[in-house]
Image (tube, rainbow, N blue to C red; front, side):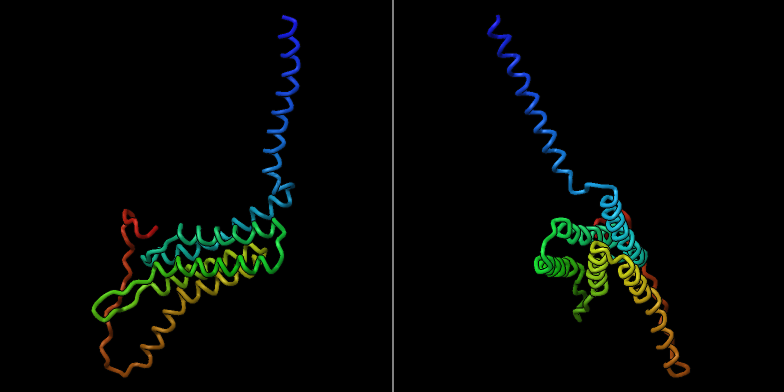
Amino acid sequence: MTAALIQHEKAEPMMGGWWQQVWDTVREEFSDLPDAAQVTRVTLRLLIAAVLGGVLGYEREKKGKAAGMRTHMLVALGAALFVLIPQQAKVTDADLTRVLQGLVAGVGFLGAGAIIRVGEQGEVKGLTTAAGIWLTAAIGMAAGMGREATAVLATLLALFVLSVFPKVAQSLELRDQPAGTPQPPPTHNTPKSKKSGARR
């Protein structure tokens, strides 16, 4: 009985030390955000990336394009995270450059999936959507690297190109047409059904 009691007393400090090691390991694993300033910085960068990506995605989704709001938000958020992690790990500029190169190439493959050929003439569709995904990744990268003002400016320019510029170009084409030229019927982009899985 006395021997069992002695073994129990010895086991208690060992178990206490084991749980302390577990707790210390968990705390160390979550130590990448050590203070409120770092938490605020990371949250702000990721949030701005997601919001700006969502703005571009909403414009695309409103026109019935394949890649919608959620796709653009995830692309921007992922791109921001890809550059945030190396910064937190304090990698060299050369290593960070390789990360950016890989990210640009990877997003290029993602955008290529939106490009299709249709019809007997082999008309290419989806180029603008692919370019939009690529630009969304660049905006996410800018936000992730702490260049939020640059990311916002790029988003505004992208919205101008996607929304305003086509109307300006169409009005210029109509003005240059000779008088009496029959006008083509207006085209309306019909948004795809929400049940369709292609948009996501």
